[in-house]
Image 1 (cartoon, rainbow, N blue to C red):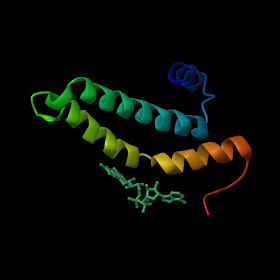
Image 2 (cartoon, rainbow, N blue to C red):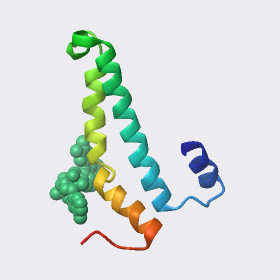
Image 3 (spheres, rainbow, N blue to C red):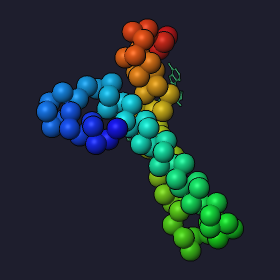
Length: 87
Ligand SMILES: Cc1cc2nc3c(=O)[nH]c(=O)nc-3n(C[C@H](O)[C@H](O)[C@H](O)COP(=O)(O)OP(=O)(O)OC[C@H]3O[C@@H](n4cnc5c(N)ncnc54)[C@H](O)[C@@H]3O)c2cc1C
């Protein structure tokens, strides 16, 4: 998705709704990878010996800023269906 969005952006064709969908998906997948990595490390994963919890906390912030997870879903939904569910 990101590669395709990059191509569209270079061509001046990327839409705000496509960027919304990519931001939401990137952050969601990244935090899933962090959680999986934390579990692979077991109990050591919650210590500061490894930086995985720091990445998780950073990503929790990114879920909120530059458009929250929920709001990007509403934007994507409106782009696909034409229906405004913001209200
Ligand atoms: C680390 C960090 C850095 C930031 N940096 C900046 C910055 O540089 N510049 C700037 O302007 N702002 C910045 N922000 C603010 C950020 O943009 C807002 O926190 C964000 O837009 C959410 O707004 P809010 O905090 O008022 O939450 P609210 O709007 O009160 O939302 C609370 C929750 O309700 C959900 N929600 C809200 N409305 C709906 C709806 N209609 N339907 C369903 N769910 C809904 C949201 O998704 C969220 O989960 C930053 C925030 C953080 C955490």
